[in-house]
Image (cartoon, one colour):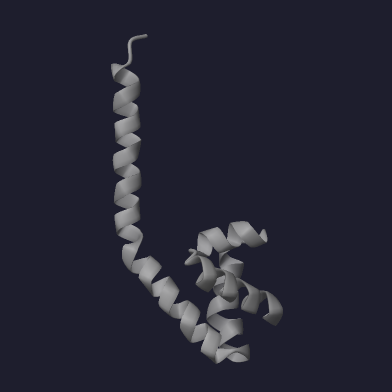
Length: 86
């Protein structure tokens, strides 16, 4: 489990990935990634834990922006499909 936690952390740091993206890449749940990163990694490699924590804090700060962009795109696609002749 400690190896998986380190592998997850390296993936998140290298790819600037979210917990959701890391979970998908490794085939585990978001809860597992969160537990590995927040608890197991802190115990086995504190330096790596601090690095991944910075990436995740940036992701968390930008989360509302990404959500707003996704919502805008959703409504633009819906509007475009209504306007097309059918």
